[in-house]
Length: 339
Image (tube, rainbow, N blue to C red; front, side, top):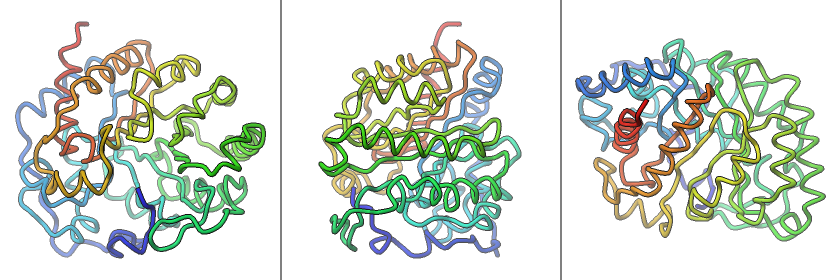
């Protein structure tokens, strides 16, 4: 995926959502949604948090919204309706990747959701991408701020803590594909990550967590697992075309056990973001169900939750065609797991 703010609607990245003039109405809760939510909460004590990547999709009419609304309006006004859905208890703030958000922007979002809602925040590309890119997403030069501990603290973690407070669930550092200078120098990367964790963890509130997501399968290495385990940073299970299937990432999860599961189900294997968008929009139904991935994820979730840990799973429309439908299918499968 090309990460370039200039190619996206500016309204999606305004720092502070405007107060709604006319509230976006949520979809009428389906009886099954309510029953599944109650069943999963009763079984795992509210430790399971399912959600989507962003929320500004008109095609979710009847699934999340009472009717189709313009995407710009959903971006500004749709979060309270999203958070009213009984199965959606978290959301990934992907917009934070493209431009660091200020504390006021986070506070405005936090004010729109219930007290038990939690956010998954992506650290800004200014610190999580090893290269600086042009307007088309092409690498131009190395990024001197890559994994810079102080910039990460001041532009990512502190604003999220100040604005979201206890609604900050996870801060995810998604490492964009690394250039050879970093990918083939693990000692350099290891040292830089160590400095990052040492700087951020002392300020991380209780109940929040840090996570690392990869885009290079070459980094699924014992040294990285050992470092994450030592610092208590979670390995983010990144289900994406650039990464191997979920079964091949399980050794990394086992090596960093125990701890909460953080999973971002982003992109189905064999797809690109552009092709999935062209083929699957308006994202109103499952177009390409990925049953093997879902079944494997259910097993991981059941094991994690059964051991007393929590789980954050956020799903992109490009995983199966419709993120809320994927959440529903995942909830159904989890509810069917024997006690």
